[in-house]
Image (cartoon, rainbow, N blue to C red; front, side, top):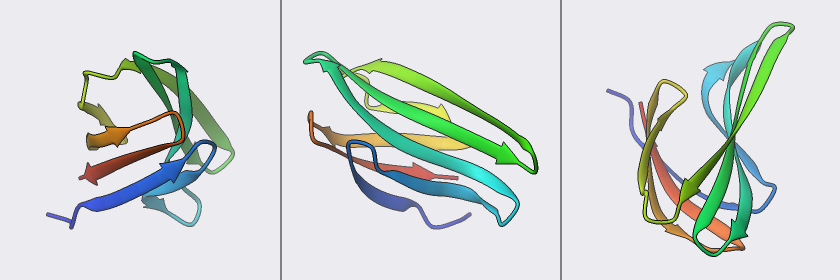
Length: 87
């Protein structure tokens, strides 16, 4: 099993979760549209193909599946998010 990634992202920042040169999975912190909801975008690419899904999650939800792994949110504010990605 791969080592989990601990990440801290500010609004608009992205981090690569997995993948190789020609493709992969990224997470982008999209901020908080209101005080009870935060948003992350999951971007996927493979060659010339790409897709992005914007997820709106309640602040009470601290775990969700994405990028063929599990994401656990430790803290979220309107400025940044702290999370761990496990494959």
